[in-house]
Amino acid sequence: EQDQLSRDIKARHGVTVHIREAGAGFRNAVYYAQPARSELPLRHALLLLRDFLDSLPSGLVSEALLWPYTEFAIYLSGPITQKSAEGIVYPSGFSAEEGSLRYLALNVQDYAFQSTLHHEFMHLLEDRLSQTAYEVDKPVFMFWDSLGPKEAEHHGFALTYTDESGDTFSDLDYTSFHEKAQAHPDSVWFVDAYSRTWPLEDRARLFEHMMTKSPYTDPFTFPNLRKKAQILAALLRQAFPSLRQVDTAPWETQIEKTADYEAFLASVYDELTAP
Image (cartoon, rainbow, N blue to C red; front, side):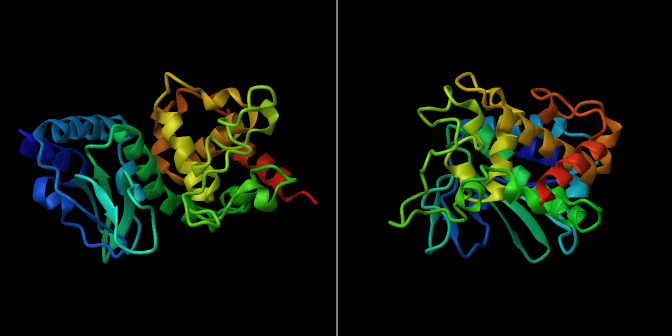
């Protein structure tokens, strides 16, 4: 039954899904994985993946696949482990490329599989956002690293995955999890410490929360996070023609959409580049 689900996803979306032994068959310099041998979590992951891809506007996946990539695949594996000094020790998933293949690897046994799927898929969408930044007059994407507290070094971005001790970066300053966040909502610029590592992780973490409403926290009650989510949604509309065919994308249901995304982005650009 899992094999049929994989074939259905390939037929409907052009995405190759590798499962069981093949799910750990990616070649990567930073990570390796154990196969997912339990059928129940594998089926659960396949159903979540199918439903997610079905929810996307028609054509978006193919628009995300840019030269030199000609194929998109997803490896559904067991636990993923770091095998070099780079990366994260035990990631829930990652995105990478090999030759003409662009792929995601996802641990189906991770309790937050759905969030990880959304997070890593945002990394795929990044490719087109980056390309579009070179084609527009006011590339807000290139100034994302300014979307943080002006008083902080690098506007609050750590620009590293680890702290000075080599441990995972965990500083909660300027995040929604800081102990004073509720009392000072205007001081919150990031969802959590991981959002602070790099701009692409900031966008991916935002995308996670835009896709799935958490029962525990709503980062979009904080004005800066709400505006950053609106900026990300506008950037996606600017970059992906398929989004112009739909009124509301799946990640836009929790935010107030801007009526004119081009004018909105132009005003954001002017704010970020003002002397």
